[in-house]
Image (cartoon, rainbow, N blue to C red; front, top):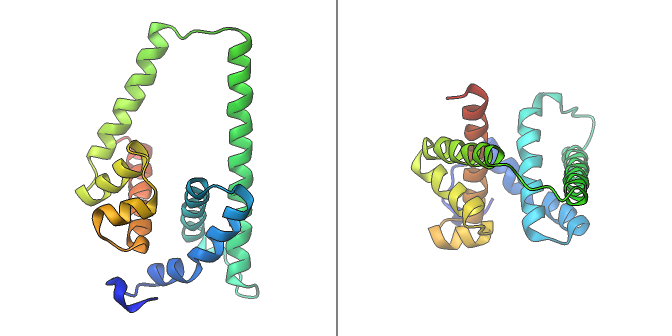
Length: 170
């Protein structure tokens, strides 16, 4: 961990900082897209921290992370294929949404924005920049004048809190 990052040396930060580039570069080779690679890397670490108790010390930690990254990437490909297939089916039927469906979609979007607005300002801010303004982690880092690793951690924590709010229907 570099000493000028200003972060405390929690196990979470150390794990993230020591392994981020390794996982990110692996996924980047598969996707050739920085944005997608960042998203999958964030998801990989999220899953790894949720399942850390399942890690078997007989194996390399990096190998374990890469297996999670592979599975996360495969999940994304399946989701993308499903979305593309669904879109093609919709196009075949020349489907237009009804006013009711438009309302439900807008209501879901509004509900999500409301849940994001319930988060602490620093989490709300990084999610807004990342998903509504479509900024990269590097761009957010520059905009907020904070280290990239801090932004990664904030996005990770913000997404986790948001998922909890959605699950609990807070």
